[in-house]
Structures are given as C-alpha cells and as structure tokens.
Image 1 (cartoon, rainbow, N blue to C red):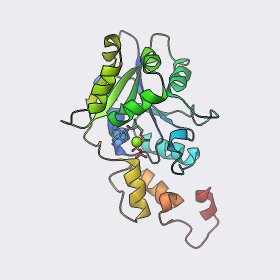
Image 2: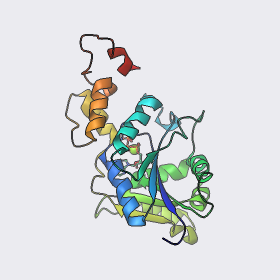
Image 3: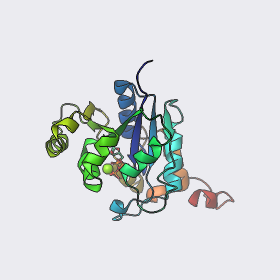
Image 4: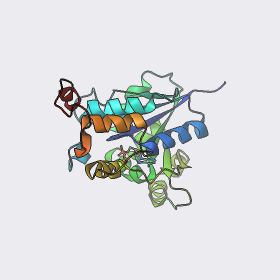
Length: 222
Ligand code: ATP
Ligand code: MG
C-alpha cells in the first residue's frame, strides 16, 4: 500500500472497557484504513476525582483481556507509567516518537467527550498532531461536534470526522451501577472482562472466587 501509515489512538478510563469502546475502535479502523488501534488507559485522571477509579493495573488488565481477540488492537502503558496527570497532547506526542514521521494519527473519542477533550487541551495543538474521529449515535444530531467545528478555524474543521456507532448507549458508569446492584453485564462487556470483574469484586460486586477465603482470594483483591 502506498501513502503514509495511519493509526488510531483510543484513550479512556476504561473502568471497565465495554463493547461501545470496542465497536467504536473497530468502526474507526475499518472506515479509515487504520493499520492498528492503540488503546491508552489513563493514569488516575484528575477530572474523575468525584469517584474512586479502579487501579490502573485493573483497568490495564481488563483492556488487554478485551482486545486480545483483535489482531489490530494494542494496549499502551504510556499514561499508566507516567507520573502525574496525563494530557492527550503529551500522549500523542509520546506515541508519535515511535512512529514514522509521516504517519497519520487519528484520535478516537465519543462525541460526548470531544468538548471535554478540547477543554483540557488546546484544540489547535491537538488537531495539529492528529485528526479526530468522534463516535456519534446513528441518526442523532451531534451537537457537540457542531459546537467544536464552530470553535475551530475552517482549515482544522476538515480534521474532525464522525462515525456512527450503534453501541453508543453502553457506558462504564452504567456497567458499574449494574454490578453494584447485582444486575447482569453479560453482552455489554467481553466475557473475559465480565469474569475479571466478578473475580476481583470490582464495583462492589459479589466476589465469586475464593469464597472460602482460599489462598488466591487475596490475589484478586490487590
Ligand atoms: P463513564 O461512564 O465512566 O464516563 P465511559 O463509558 O464514557 O465511562 P470512558 O473510559 O470514559 O468510558 O471513555 C473513553 C472514550 O470512549 C471516550 O472518548 C468516550 O466518549 C468513548 N465512549 C464511551 N462509551 C462509548 C460508546 N458506548 N460508544 C462509543 N464511544 C464511547
Ligand atoms: Mg465518559
């Protein structure tokens, strides 16, 4: 294939990762001919300080489990291993250092997160380093995207793309609430992630391993 390589970057808290994230990443990959999508779980994010986020290791492992069946998906530890708060611009810069100079980077995000992303970082700086793919609900007018397009100069507006994602209604907050209430999360997250959540007792769920307090029960609680 000619032309420069294009890769996707999907940042998130992934607490937990779910089929919405995976469907959005795969749609972006196929629509934009991306050679790979790199999932970047955040370190402990300052703007989610209102609730206790699961440890980076739990979120990293769930992301690895969820992506193993897709040969085009990879997981990066760049934000997890970096001390202090992470900014998307720094992450893209760090990932870029390992790519060819002319490689194109697409940052994949939900339409709801676009404005948040742009508030935490300078839109111009981000759009200089990467293009943006925002996942929107099918047939739903993406107000956030229109606002964003209005807020940036015409030249950069072409660097903001949208894709329609049918699984957009799935959210990590809903999954955490379901686990806490003992409701099923099957078919919302990959089975491996479902089992990991239940085994580790994340989100206040009933822990299903080591019920007798066996030697392994502590391991999953770490
Ligand atoms: P929470 O409910 O805790 O906010 P979340 O489900 O939004 O979690 P995040 O880890 O915060 O998950 O999101 C990471 C990225 O994935 C963000 O850009 C977000 O907009 C996007 N995203 C989240 N849910 C979906 C979904 N169902 N479909 C497509 N993109 C999504
Ligand atoms: Mg969110």
